[in-house]
Image 1 (tube, rainbow, N blue to C red):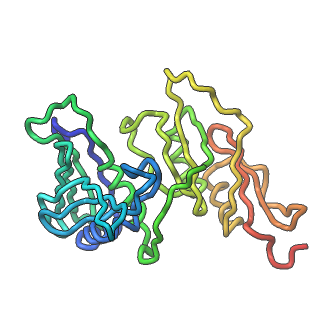
Image 2 (image 1 turned 135 degrees about the vertical axis):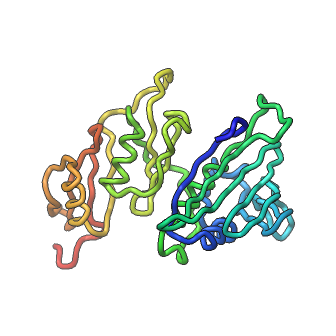
Image 3 (image 1 turned 90 degrees about the vertical axis):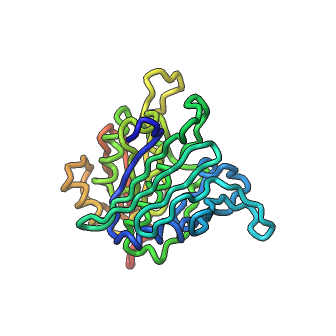
Length: 278
């Protein structure tokens, strides 16, 4: 990361550089995660778009027919399958690179100050989030069926003393989807949205200097999964504590109980009563 950089990150996706570049530039409105905090004006925004070629713009769209858009960046370098550079209105530039690897493409971004810019001026972030949002979709082999994703306005929140370790454990053991930010990139109490069965679970860490009330210890998550037995076996193989295998409920479904590394109780069940259940 250069001295003038304010953020940098990289991901690897299982598609070739040309395809990765097309997904990144042509399909941004499919993979961009929509929420009040991921748009500049969350109340009015309807999508995002990248216009191709040098001079093209990264736009937040409010009313396309009326030409009501917000320019977030202008393209200064356009090399399909290799590189894309955006210059932003706050005198920064985001340099996205697409490099072939043995199994796909490494996509990286360095968001840096332009020469002569006052380093004390506020910098509008989000360029590294673009890479994270893109990667979640580009790692999905069924990306042709992507639907626009809206982050729910109301989501369950789980607090962890070690949010990095716990978040990665949830991804590996309970099969949540998403990406945990690299350590130190964001404040420890930054809300990180992960996906479970199409819904959003937010994980957060404790900030040592934060005086906010701590959550009650008896909060838990209930999640419906399609392959309950397979999910249980995965958790057991990974060493998760469970109260036993899936069992029948008195309302005709099945479920099992497990705990995460910091003791939160999770219940995993079937979506609907199984055929033949009384």
